[in-house]
Length: 63
Image (cartoon, rainbow, N blue to C red):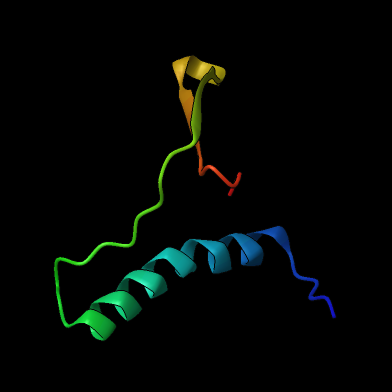
């Protein structure tokens, strides 16, 4: 099965997922301070246009 959608809609969907995960974790634990975290396996810092930087973080399993 696959879903096709414009990039802007896919971007909106992906940006919503971390907030949904955070809300679900707080509801499940009953702890407003609970945070869902991942271990950092690797990271990189790149130059981008107009003096910006891109920080990429990867988990040990490359997520």
